Image 1 (tube, rainbow over the protein chains, first blue to last red):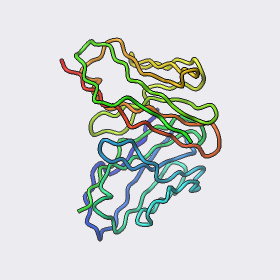
Image 2: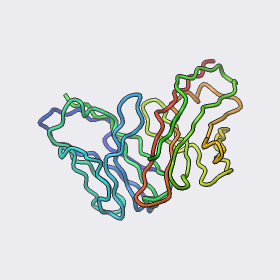
Image 3: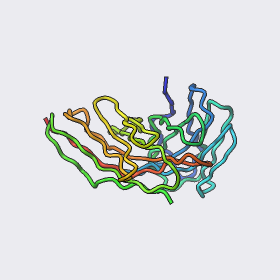
Image 4: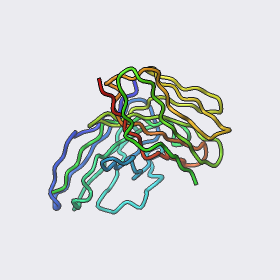
Length: 113
Length: 113
């Protein structure tokens, strides 16, 4: 089973709202990732968790706050977003953070109004 | 640094035509190479991979061979179907440190009946 699940599938939020995106995998993977993808572009890496510890933060604004409660779950907390943050947010996981292929979830389509 | 270059799209083909999408890379060390496919409104799916020179990855009729001498990983399929219409991303991951996926810009494939 190579499934990564994400909820919700779609999210519309105002600029003053607080919301969270959720990601789950049950493959025993020890690395998890958040990506942001704009239309007609490749995914851009935001965060990497390795063994439940944040190992890479690609200079992401503080209005995005990741959390890894355990090895299967990854959250992305959103607060005071801007309209330009509207995008597809993808979660991925891999066996380790080095060299292994990543498996992606279906994504959350976020619209900030 | 690492980089991946893909041919510009869209690539427009008729059903049952032969497909080639070119991909070349620049990397330090010995990268693993991947093709991902993204269908409209979905996340990325791992299509195939190769981890060392002369490896051939294959899946669902698609093939790609890791050519170290030409630093290439071209995607091919002998007979495309309408259902193959999607965006295809070539990517690499180097086998050291907290390495992450480097993506090409993506190539859109449109197959008409």
